Length: 427
Image (cartoon, rainbow, N blue to C red; front, side, top):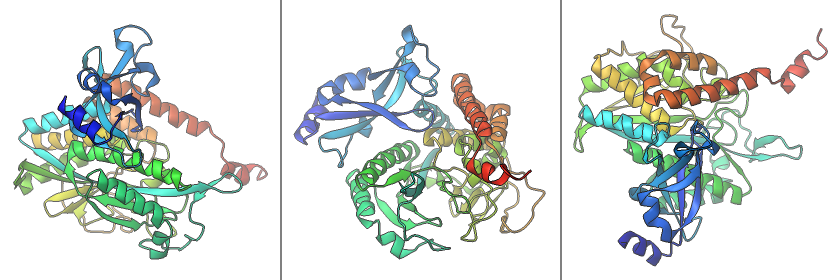
C-alpha cells in the first residue's frame, strides 16, 4: 500500500501502536511496519484483562483487546529513529469497545456534531522536572530553583534548556506549533504550550507530548512528572482546556450558545471533577488555600468570570478556559464529559449565572457551590449525575469508580511520616 511504501522510504521500519488506559497512561506495543495493513484493518492485539479499566474476562471472545490504528495519526518519532506512532481505538469482539477512552470521546464528539457544532481545544500541560536525592526522596531536579515566587524565573528556565530545547524540537518535528515555554509557580515546574486544534487531535497530541517528555527527560537524567501536587505549600500542575465552539470552519458559535454550554459545564462541575481531577493527590491541588508564592491558581468554587483565573471557568473573547483539570487527568475522558455537560446546557438552555469578577481565593462567597474537596466526594457526585455518568457508559463507570474508590481507601489507610512526626510521642 502507498502509505506503507512512503513510510519505508522515509526510513520507518517499526510502528508504535499506542492507546490509553483508564488512567490516561499510554500503553501499546512495537509492530513491524509490514504489519500496517493488519493494524489498520483489525488492530494490534492485547490481553484485555491486563489493561487497567477494561473489566474484560480472561477467556472467550471478549478477552482480547485490539487497538485498531487510526491512519491519520501516523507520526514518525524523532527520539526513536525508524519508529512511527499510530494511535489505536479499542475494539473487542469486532466492535468498538465501550470502555476505550478514545471511543468514549468519539461518541461525545459525534453528539456534538449532531448538534451542528465542532470544538477547537487548546491544552496547556504543566509538569515537574524531578530527581531522587541521595536519600531516595523525590525532589526538584534543579537544586538552585528556590525562589519564593519562581514564576517566569529565567535562570531556572535556562538551566534545563538542553532538555527543553530538545523537547521543543521533537514536538515541532511531529507537527506541533510550539507557542511558548515558561517556568511556572512551583519549584521544578514548567509549562509548554502549542497551538489549538480539533478536540480529538489535541487529545492525541497531549499523549504524544507525554511520550516525548518522558523519554527525553530520562535521557537527561530527570524524572518527568504530571503528578498534580508533588510538594506541599506550592502550587500544583493544571491541564487547562481552552475551548471554542464552531458552526463550521469559519463561523464561531454565537455568544448565547457558548453561554449555555458554559452553563452545562457549571451545572455538572462537581461530577466533572471526578474525571478532571481523578486522584487523591488531585484534591491537594484543587481548592488549596495557601502557597509560598502567594497563590495556588486552583479553583474551589463553581463560578465563571471574565479573565478570572480564580474561577473554574475563565471566560475570554469567543472561548473559555476550563481550569479544573489537573495533569493526572485522562484527557479523552475529561474532554468527553466536558462535551456532554456542555451539550446538556445547550439542550436545557442553562444560564451560567452572573459573571464573577471577585478574587475567589480572597472574597468569601458562601452562595456559590463548592467543587469536591476529596476524591470520594467527586465520585459520589459522578455516580449521582446521569449526564456525566452516561458519557462513560455502565462498563467504564463501574471500572473507573471501583479503581478510584480503591485508591481512596488505600490513601485513607496509609500512615504517613507527617502523622508519625506529629503524633508518635504527642499523647
